[in-house]
Amino acid sequence: MMLELRSVTKSFGALSVITDVTLSVHDGEVVGVLGPNGAGKSTLFNLINGNVRTTSGSIVYEGRDIGRVAPWNRCRMGIGRTFQIPKPFRSLSVFENVLVGAVHGNGRSVSEGRSLAIAALDLAELSHRAETLAGDLGLLDLKRLELAKALAVQPKLLLLDEIAGGLTDAECDTLLNIIGKVHREGATVIWVEHVIHALTRIATRLVVLGEGRIIASGTPDQVLRDRRVLEIYMGEMEL
Image (cartoon, helix red, strand yellow):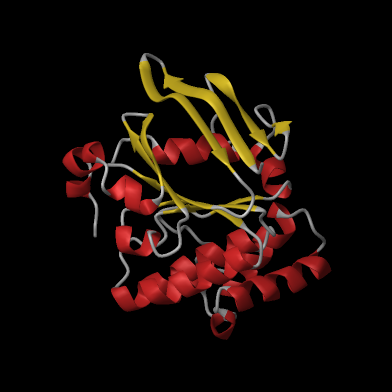
């Protein structure tokens, strides 16, 4: 088992954002997470990668309770993450951005980090922009840079946060091909996304969050026919 969330709850004062969520993710899965804005999806990722701590419950990664493990150590254990809004170091080159991920995220020396950065850029199909300033990139290349930075930590578990958002269909296809390669090379993926047609091309299972709770889980076909999902959430998602 790659990851287990056991009765996880996260509250901010009187507001419960995640409530009693139990979820198991097996090695090699691609689990898609759906839900409207405010459903708790980003908080779920913040709990997994350690940006926030659980109020109750436990998070177990590769058999180890990581509830008190710092975010940077979770990263070095193999939990990589992209963010919905890319925030690169705009004055650094694409290569330098990925090198930061390899050295500081992965805990490698600069010489080791260079090799990891080159490999991550190759996998993200961004090597041709290696010397470009990150601030000069368009949206697709920013998304690929965000992915390459996460790949530089050699993730066993990759968390993708709305990485297809804002892209054209052709750009989505480019990104899906890359994510498919990452998965085939052994990464387990949890992917939060609103662009359903992108998500269902790769996801092996879908989970739907509503008001901080899991309201549906199953194969893409099962979940997308679930009456609760159709009635409450599909209107806010891009098919």
